[in-house]
Figure (tube, helix red, strand yellow):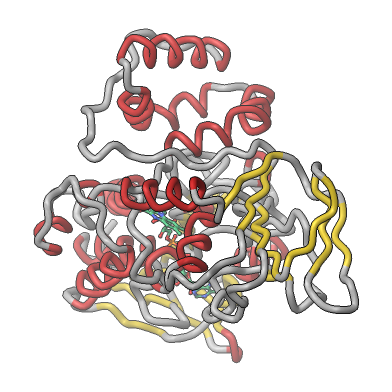
Length: 417
Ligand SMILES: Cc1cc2nc3c(=O)[nH]c(=O)nc-3n(C[C@H](O)[C@H](O)[C@H](O)COP(=O)(O)OP(=O)(O)OC[C@H]3O[C@@H](n4cnc5c(N)ncnc54)[C@H](O)[C@@H]3O)c2cc1C
């Protein structure tokens, strides 16, 4: 049903793409965002050396025109462009929209007739789209009280304050850790080593310079064990596992939904991390830089956990790793998103507190129905209250990258016709 007023909470990639689709469908949109729309975590604060981990051809804002971003950037669809450039693209897409009312404020919760803002104001709306991004980061080794522990590497300036002569420990070895390594080594002056520690000691793998076409599975898996067997066999046969992983992407949500709760738990315990390493890959130039740093001994990755962390009087942190106790001048939290309710963040947290939402499967996001509507604490679907982007995780699996967010945004109007 078009022609309604929709409040979109959050103006990152998800909020911008949702706004674009809703306007296209004839709705009026009030976009609530405290910063500049089109920034967000991934693209708003990226430095020049941070590249997209997807090819330009995958990043169009327009589901009807897959080449839109590559044409805008004047590049080949195979290229990996800077994330900051993608942020400029999103802001350009947003700037080209007419009829959106931008409300520069932080939303604090839902009301019966719309969205509450800080300061007691309210935005009245028929429908609401929650697009506030990832849950807060997990903190496997929190020392929030200590100046040399950095809980959030995305906060502007925190990495620049780390001396180039002190060894640094990164807690986590995923794409956030890669971003941090690139920033800490960007000026070439760092002579002290960087160590990343994670349970498995596995770094993300790299893309090939030219993409192989995705290979769909030739058998339909009946359960998780079946899926692992089929994927291994297909990857051996194809000679390039990337094509098999990419072929799984369109059906991964269907597979995730077909697993039992226990199978999903098993996947999260044993396979989620290897899956992320294979699925969310580094751009080839980033992969080459990381390989170079490892060969030079400037960056190392260790498996295992952190047993303890103590603060010596002279500064820095003494960290007990599997191999023994070591001193680091700074410890940076690079863990992925934490679990709800603890990591819900202020807006999703307020929805949980008020019973407008409940925690979704495995605490990975908010609970939603098959179309993305919130499910309240009473188990009832909240009509006209939608979630898009990373907070759908758990109910869905693939819900954080642009192609999936773009489809979710498009579905907002398709489902309401
Ligand atoms: C480092 C990184 C690199 C990535 N690279 C790629 C890539 O190369 N390719 C790809 O396809 N995907 C990539 N992704 C994934 C994906 O694009 C992001 O997850 C996506 O940008 C999510 O956007 P979002 O708008 O949902 O969240 P965010 O970008 O986090 O934006 C959320 C917005 O909500 C606002 N907000 C929060 N709380 C409130 C509130 N209470 N009131 C109002 N506004 C609020 C915030 O200010 C923010 O602007 C990457 C993700 C990260 C983190």
